[in-house]
Structures are given as C-alpha cells and as structure tokens.
Image (cartoon, rainbow, N blue to C red):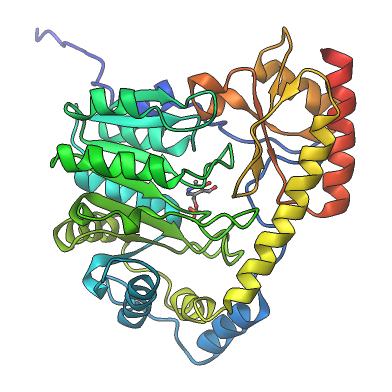
Length: 387
Ligand SMILES: Cc1ncc(COP(=O)(O)O)c(C=O)c1O
C-alpha cells in the first residue's frame, strides 16, 4: 500500500498577509446614531464637471476595452501636468495608470521588490504598505518617527545599505505630517549613497496642505530621479474614491515593469473613468485650494476640541485630513476604540498604523462640520469617562 504523505503547503501571500496585517478585516456596521470619524473619505461628492464627463462618455458609447496600458491621452495629460509642476520632465511612458492608488502601490511593490528584500517603513503610517510587503515576502523594518514627527534619518541611513526600498507617506496618514524639505533632502542623500535603493513616495494627499505650507514632493528630489517611484491617486484630491483611478510615476524601465504587473492583474482600466479623469485634471487650482481650506477649518475644530482635554496630546496635522492624538490611559488603543464606539463615535486604533501607534487613535476630519462637531463632543466626553 502506498504511504500518503501530507504536508501543509508553505505559507503563500494570503497567509503571510493574514499573519501580519494590522488592518481591520471590516470596520463593522456603525451602531444606529453613531458618528463615524473613521473613514478616509472626502464628505463632498465628486464635482459635477467630472460626473458629467463620465456621463457624456458613457452616452457616447465609450464602454469598450481601453488600451492595456491605459488611455494614451490621460497618460500624456498627466505627464504634461507633472512636467509643468515639478523639476522632473516626464514622458507618457513613465506614467502608469492604475486601479486606484492601492493597485499602484501593490504593482510597484510586486514589480520592484523580491522575497527577502528589506523594506524600510517610517511609522506610524498607512497600514497597506506592510501588507504589500508581506504579499511579496519582503521583510518590513519599522522606523519610528522622532518625537517631533520628523524622520529618523540616522536609523534610515544605517539600514539603507541592506534595504531595497523606503516607503514614505507624505502628507501622512494617520498623522497629517508633511515632511520638511530637510527631511526630504536627507532621503535624497541616502538614495544618492545607495544606488540600489528605491523610494516609494505615496503622495495621495499632496493637494491638501494647511497654514500656507509648501509641499515638497519626492518628484523634485535632484539627482535621484531613477530611484523615485511616485504614487498618486485621484481619490482624495478630486473626491473620486469610488472611481478607482491612480497613477505611478517612475523612470521608463521601472514604469514598464509596474505596467506589466498592473495589467497582468487588472487588465485594462475603465474607459469612461479615464475620460472623466481627464476632466478632473482640468479642475481649477482655486477649487483645490478651497477644498484644502475647508479641511483646514475642520483641522482647527479638532485642535480646539482636543486642546481642552487633559491627557490628550497631538502634533498638529499639517496636511491630509487626519489627526493622531495620544491619550494617557491604562487602556490599549483597541480598548479605547471600543469605548469610543460605546460612546457613539467611531475612530481607528493607532496600532493599525505601526508599532508606535499604541496609545493613539486616528480621527478623520473629512466628515461634515455638524457631524464632526458632535463626534468631537462625544470623543471628549468618552476620554473624560475612561481616563
Ligand atoms: C496614504 C494613502 N495612500 C493610498 C490610499 C489608497 O487610495 P485609493 O483609494 O486611490 O486606492 C489611501 C486611502 O486611504 C491612503 O490613505
């Protein structure tokens, strides 16, 4: 009789992600009457000119497959815009259109990182990067921010020679941190000293800046263009979260690889969404500034509400639409989140965003003013009750 040997299959991408992910599997249905300050989604709907462009496209019969590598007109338009706005002349070949920022980040990781590579992730940061690293089988090296929120360039410099990639979220989710030009030029120097090292710069919130701060994009780093992989999305800037369109900018050879991975997984993108994206790029910069001002007003509401609560500390958000307060309490972040939910306000646990997130929670202030006001009132009351 034959002996049947059974063995567990080696852990694949799903097991690796499930084994290490800090992301909540679902956010659960909010209890009736609860206010959600948990979602990273603009409260305003997509602007009418963009919606109208999609409708026109659909009615015009633009419902067939788009070219595999994305609509040439949109790649060209993005290349022109990036060349105009940054010190980086960019060709259409260097622009990869993606299924949201999410697929851009995933495709960049799959294309450029191999199993066993080390990936340096300054944290607290957007939780998806570590899941993508786990998917590929790369090793995550968390690099906590300094107390003032700046990058720990010393540790990054030490680790860089054995690493393949640094992933920056700028402006930061969950902190609203905007890296200074000196932090960015420090990263530029590290790249210059390590020619095999790549920077994946996720600038999903690059248009949402406060207090007149100038945004320093990794696209402007001199001398290291071939090592910078920029990831953008239309989701936040144009309130298009449900449309699913993002883009990666990388030098030709890297862009070709990212494109290959992206189209292998996704096939072509939605034709009419790309037509609407062309309209989105025509949005007057005044409208984008107005949106940022509106988020800044809500940021100020958060600062005011939290500054009155003892035991709550926070670095003021400088961009994006998140605040990441630390709360002095014996409770863990997860336990605090449960208490806040009991008090009728939903926030996210700080531990989702990296090891140094313990003790913090993330508040999204992209919600409408009335809900934010009431949510912050409940938040303050809950902190008083449990701390
Ligand atoms: C920092 C950051 N990058 C990327 C994304 C993903 O964006 P998209 O909706 O375009 O996939 C998000 C979404 O919350 C984000 O916060």
